[in-house]
Length: 457
Image 1 (spheres, one colour):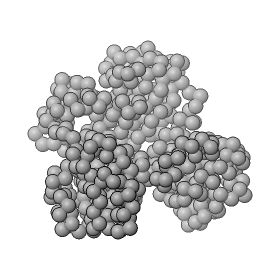
Image 2: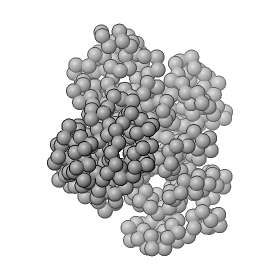
Image 3: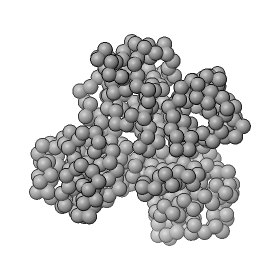
Image 4: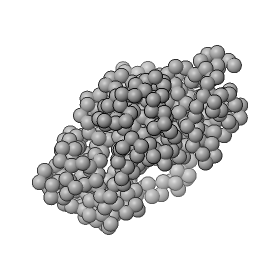
């Protein structure tokens, strides 16, 4: 596909990074020549310096022959105008990043009137992920598939766990209704088979329904109690969206915000939330506002370093579920070693949403279209869900007879309202949604996980 990406900030750069190896013809546009030089030097893409709302700039980028335009500048209005011009000039599909909560209230109307194929809101998407994590405090990461009916939960095996020291076959009865599909041990990443032996400290991912995951955690002795109160530092957009997500669930919410005028705005927007005017990086303020007794602590300031130190402090003085927002995505290997609880990368969430759409669009004529995409481990393991069409080559064949590549695993099947953890005798039927975990990155169609002989069969 021919794709134009307008805006070469962190989101735009991440989209280019994920799509550049997938055979697309990509053009990037930005008013900053240094950003253009940086991206075109690192990736095999064409760059144009200019404003995406300028028709001549879009024409130079090849808008008339473009399949998809993605507008991810820092300005919502510029993104929407760019998409409008692109739609009129090239009749291509368009995606806009829209972050303003006021615009978000009318986003369905705006998208319909401008003919947008998709809108993405990094802050709202991040808030939704945080709210999901607070529902399962033991998990450090939760990804959902099949209209949220299938979940992949990542957690760390604690010392003295009944899982530690045993193979997957040995713990078969414990993991009834779930499937352990990925294990991280230091720098090693494994998609395990039955003989793989688990160890305390392993970070494992399980596939399950929500109810199945809860039963599994109980069986291995991990607390599944609900979060009753949340302390949030930072009253920005994510904080607002998060409070809106959680307030309906009867959770006690408290935000610490340093800017007095912003505190006044929060009081008007969120009357059910306790808003504290104070410095959330001050230890005394945190202690006075009950960090030691909080069920969950979420650091949402605009500075990564502050969020990191706040989360480290919270883990030291409390038993709270800790969630850390990180904006910079270039030091994930280092950050992962700091044990900051669950980490949320709003810009990466946005990029993942867009990449998922691009892959589905690329495979629009296929019989097993990609529905959802999540990176379980950055640059190493992806989890994808596929809607199975009537002509798919894997229908009605027992999984044990499918020639699946060694680094891929079918971990879950959603059939109508049922979530199935498959075994070797399970078969896939038209209309099923299946979830695949694989270290083969960039798959677009379910046939991509089959060996060559299987593709031809």
